[in-house]
Length: 159
Image (cartoon, rainbow, N blue to C red):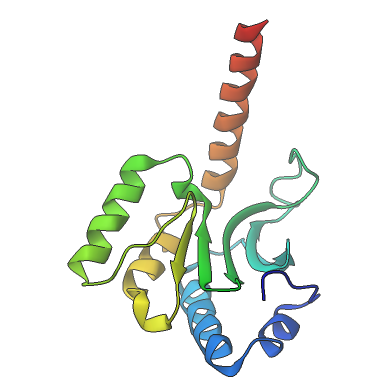
């Protein structure tokens, strides 16, 4: 399934084949266990998404809650999207090293870890990067503001 029209997380999981449903549900459990308080679980862009709610950060560029982590079942793989690594090459490199230390294959795009089976992921690493007390709710918002400021400055320089 490349895209889903499911309105709820439960409906999304129900439409997956059993093996993928099991893997996505287990990964979801890890995320929910480690995600700091304040984030909300929702469906966004056809994926299970964990967002900074409007009550905490209402000024988004696209009028959608600010996404932090997402899960999706794509046609050929499942994906764990972690937006913090989109613009953080050192964080991505540390993650690669942790995968290698755990004996796992590192298959990452710009912000998504691709996997075919749950056993492809070191779940302790996923839990650690997803949250714990070190990740404040404010961090995704401040990273978004920094990116917007950089883009705005670049636009002014081109004029």
